[in-house]
Length: 152
Image (tube, rainbow, N blue to C red; front, side, top):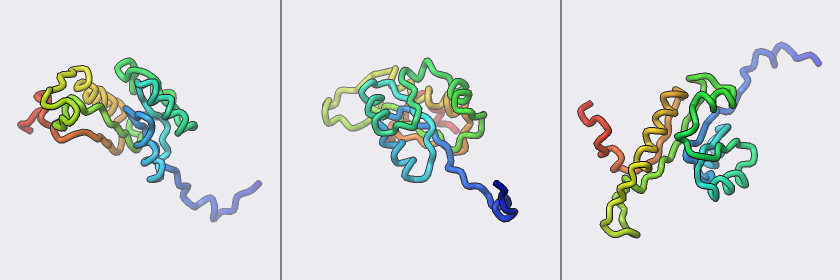
């Protein structure tokens, strides 16, 4: 089969690639798909959320387990990506430890250090992938954490 010269000069459109970290059952993944992204992977630890994600997004590889045991390099190798090639890295780290909403637990503060550290695991993936765009969903109190440099 031969291609005509006009077809060869037309740019081929590809969907921008995205990875959804802390993907849960796949709500953000669905939104990204609806917006025209090709979501190539999700990362989630909760088994029920993983099962739901797999049921809803059969063609997306979900990495089942703790993000702390996974490296950006492993994901890049598996998905054939190099640093700087990923179009969007989306992440919704757990926010309960930062949230000012206390409807269910009154004024009791949540001191879950492990949950707070997951924000920095997300940043580890940002540094590893060096994506074109970063999307992080969290709560306003996140910026008040003592580990962020407020003098810049």
